[in-house]
Length: 231
Picture (cartoon, rainbow, N blue to C red):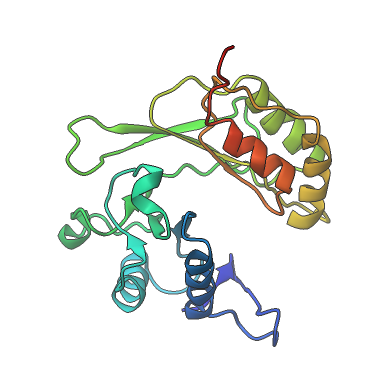
């Protein structure tokens, strides 16, 4: 298996050859061994090649066979998954009885397609977590076809000022790419504007997913999880 973006192969920075999945996973495991308090959300999705079920079966049987993986179809607490890879599955394979089990990853197959701004920031979908009678609501902002200014004004700024008050998972992407605006160019634009941003301590921001995040904003995200003690 190789890493791709749509129909384009990702390339290794070392030799410019196709980037293999085993190389990516080796880097992930090396990072977790060096930083055992961290976790990696590993989203697996087929962008090219044969059908979802066959691709996922090859991936799962070949690579998800060691103690690094959290594979339950349930959102974990951070303490459960430190030094582990959390498998998020975006392959349409869960109609197969085997993959309906509790141990093939968090089922995100209903993830909505949200290319551009269409009047609302977040799209809603639900998943059936293992051993839970009620479905879990997920809110996702993944508008990836916006230029940097549009991304900041239409997606990020409203989210930072007024994050959704919802139970379940909130997943917000700060990245985008369109035309000549590569992910790195967009990140530079967004990071410059995040310098003065302060996350509110009593608000729930969920998962913030970024390209090239600054250390300052990483610390801002971490600190937002803790309430300020009143003196």
